Image (cartoon, rainbow, N blue to C red):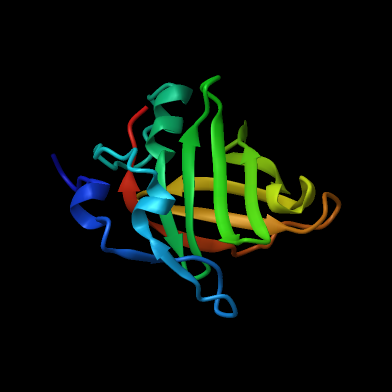
Length: 157
């Protein structure tokens, strides 16, 4: 099976804590609060240009971790690709991802702050890591380097 991503229940369990937020907000919560116990393992593979858009989107599904904390890529009831990051009680960031070339982009809103626009995010898989770039306003340039995230858990649809 190659480098299969661990199932959440194998790597993270109800006793495991996940750090949310950044260095100034090191709150920890049980992993099951982040995962909602909805995780199953699937193989994590690099981007294959012969795969359909839906298959490439499915490879993005899961929980990813950066130095700033974890975020979730999942599907909603309409099968849209959704970004979600719970930074703190004052910052619950969400957005619907749309493909734009090799990137998946979204306007990020803060659900904890009356759905105010928080900024703009773009993501792409690079082998077994996810690269993300952020900008605060639409007219600003993208962060040229961005951040890399490691997969903590793969999800199935």
